[in-house]
Image: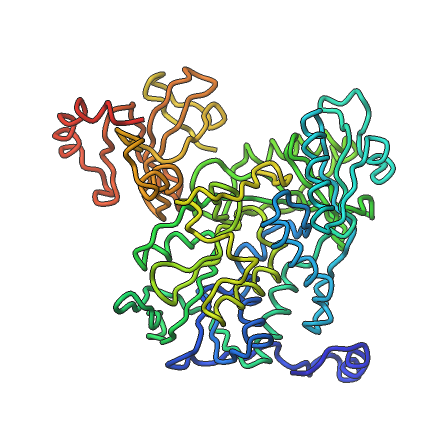
Length: 416
Length: 118
């Protein structure tokens, strides 16, 4: 792999940037691998990368039916934070946050991770009590956080309407300074390039059509490019996880919903942090290009069509304009939807299944992007050792029968 | 924007008058105390999530406030039918073009099953 550096940029400038190496190969599928990862989004590519780099499993294939990072990795609002309430999820997302902090160096790829902080607004007394509880829990878990009052919020975001006259006045917020945003496409590409350099085969436009299972043990997958064998298969397919699990005769407690986002026309820098509000239900940041990146709630019905409904757009923009009257005449440029696999307790599933060797990493719902490196790391550790990593263990599918849920609904400021 | 025919109001109304409430035809266990953890967990948390025809419960929340069922395609989002509580769908995964004769014959079962439905 050709390493990227400032010097390299100057060198390639001399040949008009026409001789850059391809970032990853486009290999033909081998007959057999040690591990197959189904799904070439951020989480799948991260899993493959850490398998090869940290756990010495180099004979790995990532099978992707479309193109790399073409699903939710390319469709989210790029927010990264770790201020979750419960110990189990705090450990998972903070593990991820620590990997984010060194990710650009680790991958030799600029993922444009910008720790510009995240505000989770409180608009009611109960919001503020929940915020205090969550920030206290965060601090006990070694995660940075502060409770701000309305004046503190106003000082950070001068353009926000923090007056008492607002329909839902801002009473305060939780503030995680280490949180921020990252460039979503770069995350997929960076992991793909680094995994490829470790010898991982990335097979695009290869669709898994079934699993090869014998005596309760998986030994490969059927694809539209022929059968590929492996004794360990990890499925990281977000919204399509339920469909894939069905091919192995497994039912998952997931419902797939459209989640949408939109961006405005580019503006001059006006908002230098991330603002989320669970109560009026919208979240917003400004990209380096200048467009406002706005997130919405999920559509309430199940759906696999990668588009969202207009009523949800309207509700979201009402929330944004409620918080930021200054944006009332900004024009929206693009709007899109992704399919999120929501779990009943708003926490992911990182789990073995009753088919030996078949693992699922899914159920990230509306908040999977922030977990990309951490999810990949603990899932890789689990695949390599055949035992779930200690951080992943509480997220077993068994919890829906044992009752040991990790209920992050609302508590995490998760916007649903 | 969906235009949804409320079988009680007998009119097409806009999506915003309605709320989806998840999978239709969930049978609550007759004797919850006798359920194993497996059965109870399945009833609480495990739902059909098909890529295709889906039967779902909706409520006309700012209209007549009654619950009813919709058969909808989860990729095209086409609404194939709406029907009252206690009725059975004529479009199913097995009969994706609708099968009203079978639905009619199944109406006989409705009386029995109506008590089991949500």
